[in-house]
Image 1 (cartoon, rainbow, N blue to C red):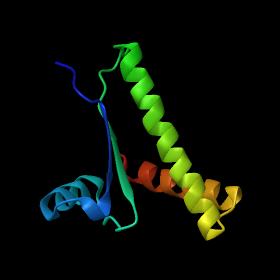
Image 2 (cartoon, rainbow, N blue to C red):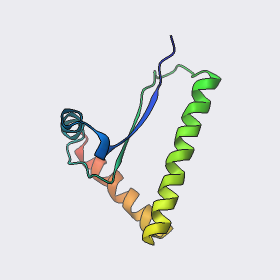
Image 3 (cartoon, rainbow, N blue to C red):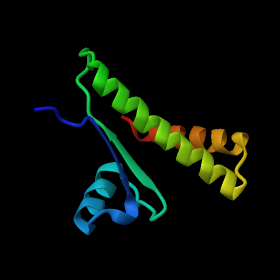
Image 4 (cartoon, one colour):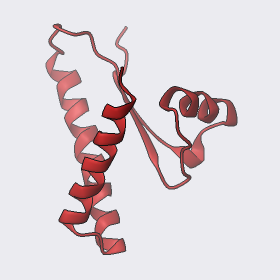
Length: 96
């Protein structure tokens, strides 16, 4: 039996308990216009070709959505990069 290793879910489509669990795990509130991307992997184990293709397709779909959102809202590449840098800094500060 094959298991999916990547999941993408719109926050607005999450059930209340799922959303609360994710918010508790992430330590922050999720917004309706966000998506949750979850990937499960075993360190050191190489995925098979089908799994890699599915993961790539999921990532490409996500980046297409990001690009579309940026264009619709007039977000520049520089603003996007700054937001990613800010988010990464926030995550790093939370680590012990």
